[in-house]
Length: 410
Image (cartoon, rainbow, N blue to C red; front, side, top):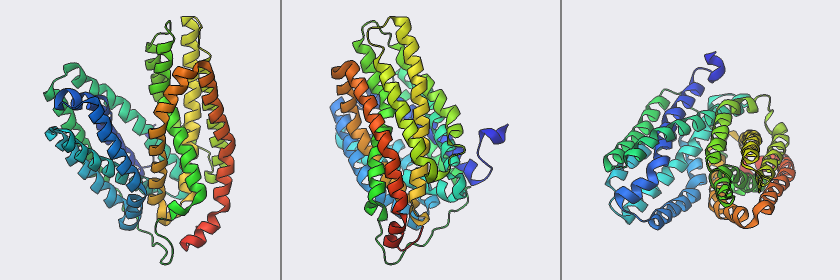
């Protein structure tokens, strides 16, 4: 039974356990961070937003270079170093006493998280044979979602107490999860550093045109399907006076349970790049259909709204699972083995771009567009689904060209 719920013993299982421990703390921090910074530190919401925005830009710009460093020094050491640094810096947040000290620490956190993400992807790529990478990445995503959900429940305790002592305890607890995760990760096997070509460009991912196009399309889609439930649906239900807002919690619960229990199932039987275009198209079309279902709740009685929202949430999570599986397949499949870290970091840039663009666009479409806005959002996903396989085929065709450019035939 345990073997079915966890990846194989060894580095794969160690990576999964480290992720679970770390995301427990992350979930608690995400739940409480804004109130800690505003109510305990005394920052204004605008200052918090500006500080996080500056940090996000810095982390985005450094994602690919830090991934390159992980490839060259070894992803295990890079990830452990990033986790330890993040543990120290998160603990240092208890000393924040104003805007500039917050900005400084937020920037270090953003850079540390960018380093950890690139190194984590490279660790997964090097921990198992290529045929097992997608399934292991699915295990890690499943545990990541479960850990954040459980951590968010723990974060409710300091929210209820609403005292500085409770917030400080949460910060120090989060910091400890980084250090414990680093200690767990130290037991993993070392991923060997593969030699980079001597005569090619170092940041080859930033010259890989099909991969960059994929990064933008997939990154914006991923940000959008994540924000639909946290931004789009709450705003939509708020405009429908008769619709109960508890449906947001119900939809989030459906999504969380689906992502935790079904991500590995969605990844099984997928043959890397060969299946990525088909799976990505399917996922985009299904998420697009869920958008139309959300919009169709306009003006319906409460029982019909509740039923349709829950159905839409179930459809949504299936599309999300397939899109995530396609993402794993493309990022691992298009990257040369010696450059897995920088490709992971470059993909993270697309996700960050989506995180910057999606919230205002989504809010505008839902609040101003109404049903037409939801249908337009569904059409955008459908269009992306149609384009998706073509971009993947383009990437597959150019692998020899990338190999020549980089000095490798991978």
